[in-house]
Image (cartoon, rainbow over the protein chains, first blue to last red):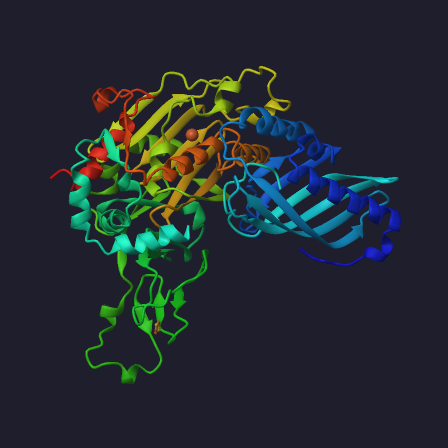
Length: 166
Length: 400
Ligand code: FES
Ligand SMILES: [Fe+2]
């Protein structure tokens, strides 16, 4: 991960659209608004969660790969319709920190952020689920921003098995 | 959690024999397991000795993880650190990953390539054949010092179709240990074992290693909603239960997925290869191998105490795969059969929810199909479990 800082090339309007997207994304996950999660992706999009271990060894396996919008829809369907009664549910609290925004072309920006995800099961004490970072491509169109791609790199082994996207 | 640890220390002072005798009265058949077996720390410590440092063969790696001469991999066998090396002579060797001087962990990287291993403490050097090569200040070593006495402690190593096993004190060879399940192991490894590593998924379950194993390889399809919604039916499986150890395997041909409209993107569950063999192999004490659709996976297991278990799901492709086919394997492997897989995620909830009740003084009971002899086992019987428990009772001294 290179945290090149090229923010000067980014307009205030684009920056605010990107920050708005990040806020909506995290809120959708933490309030389990799965359609809101789906809605933060562009029509043509890619979402994946992998480990630094795999990435650094050039191993392609991930924890989740949704390489098109239909796959993201299917993930929402599994969470809401298939797993609801079997998995051990938990709540999350995502804390993100934007590290850099760099302009790729007229509409697309590469955005790097750190992320720490806390989780709470039942009313038990909260714990760290994962730490890691996002490597995103965000498409900005006027005042709206959507993820064209979002890759989550997690630093180590998740504290519990992941049921929800990060 | 803290309370449990304290309890563990206190109970740990009891001698195994006392604990064994107390539990043995309840543990009279392999069909009824006292839950203390999953939660008593004295039992756990004795298992490390009799099972993980005993005569069992343990599945620890695949050759694809040690891709060239002088590759190595480190891992834990129970609570023993192990260094597995592939020599220039292509021989695989496994050692206790401990410097024979004062016991410093010798190699800390997970994998790599090296002919020699240097201990950071007093700079003793060992070859990847386990020999003590030298160390500074040798003139001042004790008078009875003989280099041979300071070689790394070695395990027996053997392999089948590229899959590597090791054992501290084997009583029989690997092939004999696996028995009739060896054929299904070869099937999962695509016969020639020329697999390529696609990567790992890691999970830590809040469960005893036996709770993990008992519920990972074998359960009626009732648990997995995904299987039903995708209208997958295993078909008539060929079931093997290997006695006395209790390995279990089932093989069948995957039936093609018929699009029932449930998935927006059914390409995820398509079989694009030509090899329709589906297999689930469960090798005592704790290892699972699966081949489903186009995924090939082995699960390495490391107990982390009486009620925590780390499982590493390694997924593979084959050397002959085209880039497109490999991408399909990666996509399936990443989404279907790991700890967060669309098909398998419910397993974890069962491991954890069984472990939560393991201190209630009750029993875990096997019921379905257990009166049938092992040779007549059916796919959804629980006698794939009981055969292994009968052997466990012997090994742990509960049959007296
Ligand atoms: S402990 Fe390894 S050289 Fe002394
Ligand atoms: Fe399962």
